Amino acid sequence: MKKTEREEYLEAIQSFLAKSLSYSIENREIIRSFSYDFSQKGLYVIKGESGCGKTTLLKLISGLYPLSQGQIFVNNQKKTASQMCGLVAYVSQKNTIFEGTVKENIFFGNSPLLETEREELIKNISMQEGFSGGETQLINLLRLLYSDRPIWLLDEPTSALDENNRKRVREWLNDKKHRKIIIISTHDKTFDEIADAMIEL
Ligand SMILES: Nc1ncnc2c1ncn2[C@@H]1O[C@H](COP(=O)(O)OP(=O)(O)OP(=O)(O)O)[C@@H](O)[C@H]1O
Ligand SMILES: [Mg+2]
Image (cartoon, rainbow, N blue to C red; front, top):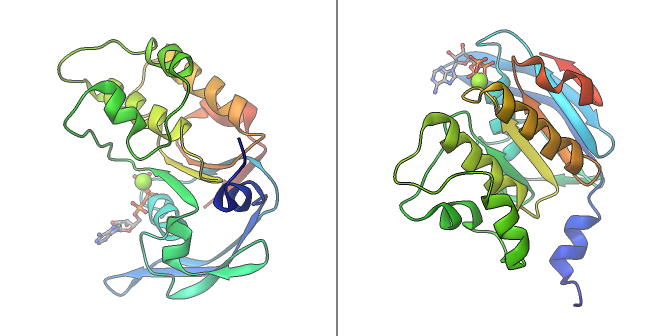
């Protein structure tokens, strides 16, 4: 099947540069001149104590907050916040479940895939009414795994998971990190050994 122009454009994104990003909430500067060159595909882990601004930084990169100070360059081109929204898949610290089945929740907004591939992944979570905090988090992570966006941002992705599921998520991301720029904010040491870079905020 021939690739669309958008698919080709997304695949060509190998890196991005955050330059002097600052962000204030209620006159308090939360992010102070953050610069980092995400110079290749791979897994970047952001660490830092509670309240230091990890979530704020991810929201800034994802385009959820306006880029009022500083710039983001993708393939050497300056991007606006709304353009970043189109390049980033973001899993929030607060997970979301829509009304509907597990499948509908996972494939929401993503292109349909081969049925066999779907079944394989869905086997990992049981079908039932209502979900626990951990199951909700897994569904949100599975939704991300099907995203074609080149930049993935995950905010505390394992906070509600048990040891087995943490390992499972680590394997998924380890498998994907050669094809994406993945940035994780976490207090969890699960990702340390597969991280390509650690960023202390
Ligand atoms: N909507 C808001 N209104 C006021 N202050 C805010 C708001 N959002 C964040 N802050 C403040 O910004 C600072 C950074 O918050 P942020 O959520 O980015 O931290 P964090 O590093 O993600 O913390 P954690 O590890 O607990 O998730 C905190 O001091 C917080 O109180
Ligand atoms: Mg946070």
